[in-house]
Length: 289
Image (cartoon, rainbow, N blue to C red):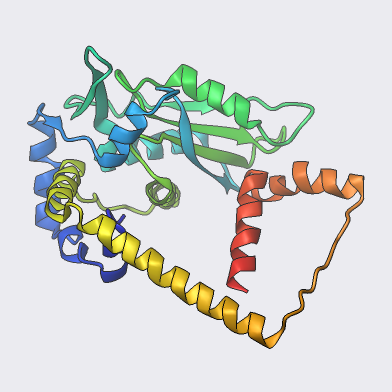
């Protein structure tokens, strides 16, 4: 992850993010298990906790994958290992008077008490609805007492030989990239591979705070400069095209109602995602062209 747009391009955090195995063991082991001190909230966490309409037990980060030869006991053991590898699952939030929050590590985490649930099949649909997933997550998670994640599985058919697995993580502790890393680690564990512990979350939070204080208003100035440069380039290209061709070509495509209904309601199910994700992907390809 990159904290600023400038970091995204010049990769100044590379040296800070690369930790040796000894550092990782020190940060993830003794420092975590022996510390109850509060950890600074990340800027995105402060924003989410302060914004209106925030739902404490809501998730917007989830991934799904399929296991051909599914073994419930094996998956449970893998999830227990995953929780012990990723210290982010130890994070808990504490709410104070006035609506303020802080976060800290839970020192005594029983990895055997994992949040693994079986998703019931619906006779009317193959895909478990997003609404029902949210309801399960709300009932099974708690940002103050934990856990802040849920792993659900749904058998593909009555033979119970293969299953789809969902990893749902609270948006306060993981972005999409982090969620994908955790999903990949779980799949690696299931095929009897080992995963290495990552850098300490507390260390990352302190680094973000230090870098934010150091950058100050420079980030805003850099972003504005980058924005103005792109706008200038766009206007220049648009002017050149207008000089070459004063005319404008328009193409109108009208789709039948039945095809429109399929595109909006069904095509996203092929990718186990939502229609807005497909629309944004299509927009991205269009802008590239």
